[in-house]
Length: 367
Image 1 (cartoon, rainbow, N blue to C red):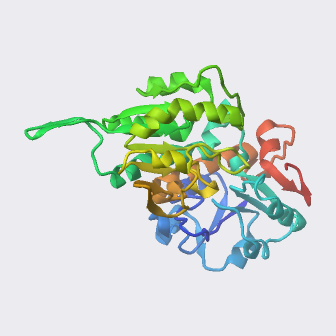
Image 2: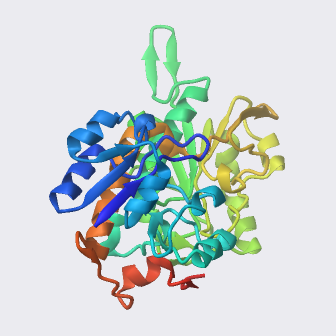
Image 3: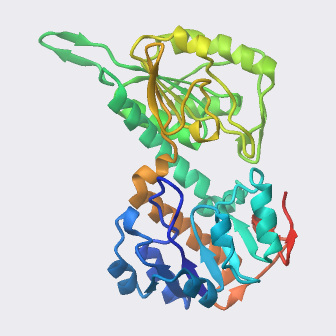
């Protein structure tokens, strides 16, 4: 089977779908691989590294699209990129199909078989394929490093001849993969960490990493498929009341809350920001999807009411080398599940296949 890796065209995207290391492994299994010229440049992978691994480098996107059976990417295709796709070709990438119904219909109209990496179910046997988790893990780490860079104080307790410096106070909204890594990183740097989440089952996980968990008394939100369900207005009001004391004392706040297919929930209002410490920093990891803070600006770092708001989007791309390697390993494991080097199995009753194949034979299978 022939695979093609296209260069990412999304702004500020430095990742690539396959690393040279993973290319070498796939070729050893019998795959043939074409890589667009300079596709790995943003991840510090040279064209020579891919050719040494056994791939063919080409500058012609039509050549790739005409010669391969499967296109591999990180991000969804643009309209311009859908145009040269031949009928029956398989496209595998993040698609965010619930948020992009028009894109999915265009792929179906072209009779492209579209498979979405972000639709991999969060079940035990799919953990090694779960790109959302691998990328969120890196993003949680980078969010703390970004926050540390923007703060006007250090994280750890430090005793000096001039006096004692008290540790920074860090508050983390959301105890998923990104939140847990943020807790672990902030604790390693020596800060006092508190965390809150709508799911009470995350309390033990947060506390195991050394964070104090802020509980919303008499209320909880269930999770579904590894994600929190959307919380009610009543719950969010109770959560706001419970965390305000910690929020107003925090030196660094990191928000990680996302609801698949929907705008990110607002967890911090402008009125709350006005009551925060001057010089505090908010790293809003949901900035690309509207932001967990009401006044975050995507792809910008701004100061409002004395608080610095960091709205950097696509945090994994800022760690492109390791992010691409993890994405590529997820992709290779996913391919092993779906196919052999001879072709796809198409077991449409199997849970992972059924959940990730979004369009096939001109039909949208998952809305």
